[in-house]
Every structure is written in structure tokens, then in C-alpha cells.
Amino acid sequence: MTDWLGFAYPKNGTKDEQLSYLAKIDKLRSESTHSYKKDGPRVPNWSLEMQITVDRFKYEFKALKSKSPVVITEENFNAELVGNAFYTLRHFVTDIEKANKKAKHEVHDWPYSTSSYDSEGICDIDTVAQRLPIFAGIIDQDRKAENNGENPGAHHYAEVVASDTIIEAIGDQKKALSLDPLNEHEVVVVHYHGGGYCIESPGVYRTSAAELSNIANYRVILPYYRLAPEHPFPAAIYDGYMFLKYLHKLGYKPENIVFFGDSAGGNLVMELLLVLNALGEAQPRACISFSPWSDLSVSTEAWKRNVEYDFLAYIPMDNVRNSSRLYVAPGEPLTDKVREMFKQPFVSPNYGDFSFPGCAPMYVIGGELEMLIDDIDAFAAKNGVKQTYIKGRTHPGFDFASSTKTNTGGNSLDNMIIYEKYAGMIHVFFIFDEPDEKYAVLEGINSFLQHIDKSRA
Image (cartoon, rainbow, N blue to C red):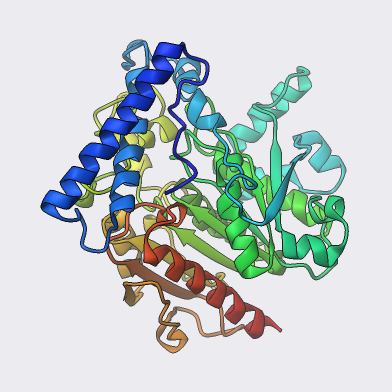
């Protein structure tokens, strides 16, 4: 099971609505069980509980979609109205204690403003705008809002998750869960959440962050970023970059920050590598991209081929509520110009160049049956990366010698890209507890990070 289940439960609904939801869940479980026993597993390495969980996941997403009172079209498009329809999926959180993940979390504000970042020396905003013109518009927009005494977009915050082991070693829970570095050499994981740049939040990944913190023995920091369609491209990437600058101001060294992102967050961490390179700034310690949304054109066969297996909702490109359109050009007609925007390097990593000297080592992970897998395969192929296919509960280890290194100068880790595809797995499968492959990939992530630690020692 996954502790994400239950997000469609109408907790503010009537008693009849709540009972109806529970009855539908019971019926779905019965039907899934009957199908599994009669026809066998939908996928050979799926357990009964995995199949039930995926079916329920699909149902809950569909149930929320069906509650939308208005049919959104290009003619009546309203970004705020669309955002309000995503309310439940933007505010659902997981419970570390209830899931018994042996960790704690704390939520902190991080003070974002262009004026304070300039005056405090956190970031030279004008230089950023000059070197990276894609940010010029949002910088100007945020400055105008601040000058008018308005909040530039949203309330920025971040969550810190630390394992009980880390907290006990520090001996001070408040300190262990603060945003400040524990020491000048502390290594942390910064996890940018997924959700198609439109939904979800740091809080929904608390339990996953707890698992990562326990396995890797690092604290995990999950920053908020602004969501589309109210805040379209490049707001999320800009916020991701600005949060890094805030961490640097607090005392974290770039070489001690590990990027981790899933789905849209997987896109974001890849894009941040390109952003940092374009600005002439230091790369992170490493980058882990899980089920990355690497091509926003939604043009490969897997989007239709794997709809039977994956829980993602396939929304065709000609629908104004397609996530790519909501993120890049919300409410606009699907013109050739918009389609070309999907192919911009800072929108889709598949069109970016990661061969620049010193690119951080990348660990890319995909599920064989996820709807994004053809795009992830294409990213690997473009970068000359050999795929490793993994099935079962045990990670086979790494063949670092065969990993792609497009630039051999500098550190031996530079430009290393590893790509693993997991048998029978779907999108962001690390959130599911049932499959053996979830535990294999966690073992792989730990081994990857240990290798980075040893190489950088």
C-alpha cells in the first residue's frame, strides 16, 4: 500500500458522501481481487496488494476530476479557477508517525524577495536576468509586486525531514529539524516534489523523505515552489534556483547538496543543472532524477501503450487541461509556437546539452511500464547511456566504468550518467510499499550516494 491513498475521501462532505466513497473503495478492492485471482496479475511481478493499490490510485484521481463543476476550455480559461480545482491534491500530506517511518519533520518559512536577496548578497538578480533571459520576466513581475507591497506569488516554505537516528545523534530535535546546516560540511538531499508542475506539495513526500533519510543517513529538505497554471514556466525553476541561493546563504556548500526530484521534480533538477551552468555557478554534489518528465511534448507511444498499467491520467495535448499546456502556455491555443516551446532546453531536458564540463553526476531512474518511459529512454539514448534493467528486491550494484562520461577532465564523477529501468514498475514507484523493486531502488540510491561520498572524500 501507499500512504497517499485516501486523498479523494470527502472529509468535508456529507455522511452519505463519505459512506459512498467507502463503499466504492470496498467494491473496487473486491473487483481487483476477483480479477487477480481469475486472470492472474496484470503485470507478472505485481502482488495482489500492488494491483489493488494501483486500481485505487486510478479511481481516486478520477473521482477528484469528476467533481470539477466547470468544463474548462480555451474560451473560458481561468488560471485561478483551475488552480482551485487542484486544491485537494495541492494540500494532501502524508503522516510520518502514522506510517511508522522513524523520522520527524518540521516546516519553515524561507524568506523570498528579490530586493532582500539583492541587498543581503544572496543573489545578484540583475546578473541572473542578463545571463538567463528566461528569468527576466518573472524577476520583473516579482519586483513590481514587491514594490506595490504585494506578495510575489505565494508563501514560500520548506520542510526538513530527519531520521530518528540523526536526531538522536545530534541530541537536539529542534536543531536537527532546523533549516540551518548542522556543520560546515553537512551533506543534505534537496527533494523537489513532482505533480506536473500543477499539483502536490512538499508535505505529500514526508514519508518518502523519511525513508530516504533513514537509508542514506542524510537530512532531506523539501522546498515549495510556485505552481501552474497561476504561475507558469519558468516560475517553478526560478523558485528552485532561488531556494538553492538561500541554502548557500545559510552556509550549505554547493558540493554538499544532492538534488533529488521525481516526475516534474525530476524535470526541475535536470533543468537546474542547465541553469547553474548557464550562470557559471557550481554544480551540486549529485543529481537523482526519478521518473523524470523529460519531454513535455507528450508524443511517444508509451503515453497510450502504458495507460492500462500506470496511474497517471492521460490528458491529450488538444485538451486545454493537459499539464504541459498548463505549465508552459496556460489557456493559450495549441499553436506551432506553443509546440516549439515544449522543445526548449529549459522546458524539456531531452533537448538540453548535459555534456558541459563538470556536469554533476546523474542517476536517472524509470519504471518499465510508466507512461513517461519512452521519453526517459530517449534522454538516455541521446546521452549515450547504457540502460541497466533491474528486477527483484536486490540491487545488482553499479558498473561505474561503463557509465557515460562525455567530458573526462576534472573530477572523475563529472558527466557520469547512470540509467536504470525497473521491471514492471510504473511512475514514481518508490511511493508504493508492495513491489520488491521499491527496495532495490532504495538500495541503489544509497549505494550511489555512498560512491559519491567516497569519490569526493
